[in-house]
Length: 310
Ligand SMILES: NC(=O)c1ccc[n+]([C@@H]2O[C@H](COP(=O)([O-])OP(=O)(O)OC[C@H]3O[C@@H](n4cnc5c(N)ncnc54)[C@H](O)[C@@H]3O)[C@@H](O)[C@H]2O)c1
Image (tube, rainbow, N blue to C red; front, side):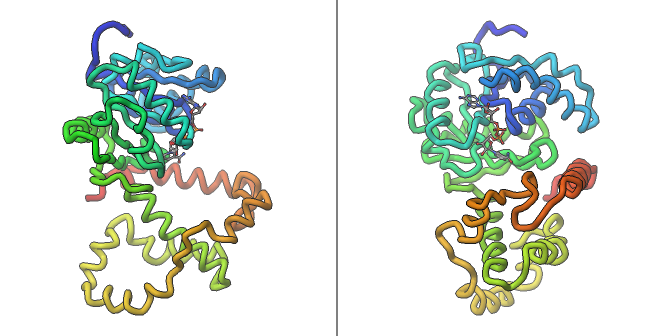
C-alpha cells in the first residue's frame, strides 16, 4: 500500500497491537480499510498477521485482507494519511497522554484521534494534544467483532463533526455506535457493569450467598431477559410505580462503598486473581476455564447474538 498523499478516508491506524488493538485492526481491514498498527513488542508485531487471520476464520471470513495490514514499531509520519487513529495501548494515563501528544504532532490536520480506554476520562488522555476538537473516545468491547457496541465519547472540546464522522465510520465497519454526550469515567456500559459488580461482591462479602450463587441468580433471573429487554424498558413495562415502591425500600440498603471492597483486595493480595491461576471468587480447573470461554465465543458469534438489539 502507498504511504504517500494526504489523509485517506480508507486508512486507519491502531496504536497497540494487543488483544483489543489486533481485533480492532481485523474489523477495519476485513471491511476494506488499509490498517497501520503500531506495536513496540517485536514478537507481538510479528505474530499480528496470523492473529488477525485467526479472527477472520473465526468470523467465517477469508483472510486475504491481512495483506493490507502494515505493522510499525513506533508512531511515525506514516500515520499522517489516516482518517482515524485508535489508541489501544495499556490502560495507563501517562502513557496514553504521551501517545496522544505524539499523534497530535505527526497526524494529518483532519485525522480523528480516538482512545479505546475502558474507564479513564478521554479529556485527561487528550490533555497534551493541540487538537482537542479531534479527540474522541471509542470504547469497544471484548471481543469487539462479536460484542459490537462502541461508545463514542464526546468531551467538552470534541467537535460535533468529529462525533458524526466517528459514528459513521463505526457503522460502516458493522459496529453499533452510541453517542456518550459527557466524558464520565466508565462511560455507560462500565458504569452499569461495575454498579452491579459492587453489589455482587458485597453480597458475597456479607455472607448472603457464595459467588456461584450470585452468578446463578444473575443468569437465571433478570440476566435471562437482558439481551431482549433493557432495564429501563422493563421498568416501563411493569409500571414505574412499582420501581418507585421498590426503590423506597431497597436503595438505602444497597452497597455504597467508594473504595474497592476488602474481599476483592484480600483475594488479589493472596494471589487469587482468578481463572488463570485456578482461584478467584471461586476455584477453577483449566478445563472449566476453556469450556466456559469456548461456550461464550460460540454463543457471541451466533447469528442470533449478532443481530442488533434495538
Ligand atoms: N481487554 C479488554 O477486555 C478491553 C475492553 C475494552 C477496552 N480495553 C482497553 O483497551 C486498551 C488495550 O487493552 P488490551 O486488553 O488490548 O491490552 P494488551 O496488553 O493486550 O495490549 C496493549 C498493547 O499495547 C502495546 N504497547 C505498550 N506500549 C505501547 C506504546 N507506547 N505504543 C503502542 N503500543 C504499546 C503492548 O505491547 C500491547 O501489545 C486498554 O486501554 C484497555 O483498558 C480493554
